[in-house]
Length: 151
Ligand code: RB5
Image (tube, rainbow, N blue to C red; front, side, top):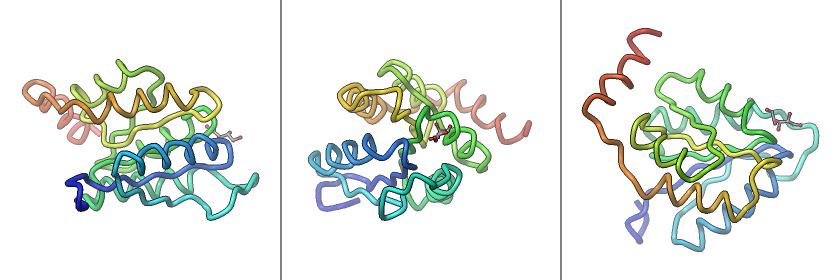
């Protein structure tokens, strides 16, 4: 936690998610979050989404970060990559309601956005929704545990 009592967020994008990633970083920083960016330092049209997506997912699955945000063009590649990491539960969300349910029922620890799909204002609402609720546990704990035991 930082001095505001907020857990730091790890974020990453490729070139296709770059603009939205920059907007999200500014938004979260403005809200008092510390944001660690694992993207390439400069916009590189040749970069590959698995590179940052695995970094974000591993950092969250290891417990180093409570929350991660990954952004590629559609969000699809980043979610495929993240969900290969045991302990990462990545949810590609295009509405605030999806984001709320991803936390409440799936305990999603990585939020995935599509930089070519979702506009910044909508992305901010999705992020707020995801961060505003808690995992409900109960029968949902059993289901989340089954992801590991049935794998
Ligand atoms: C890059 O052009 C694009 O394919 C990538 O960002 C992502 O959308 C893949 O799923």
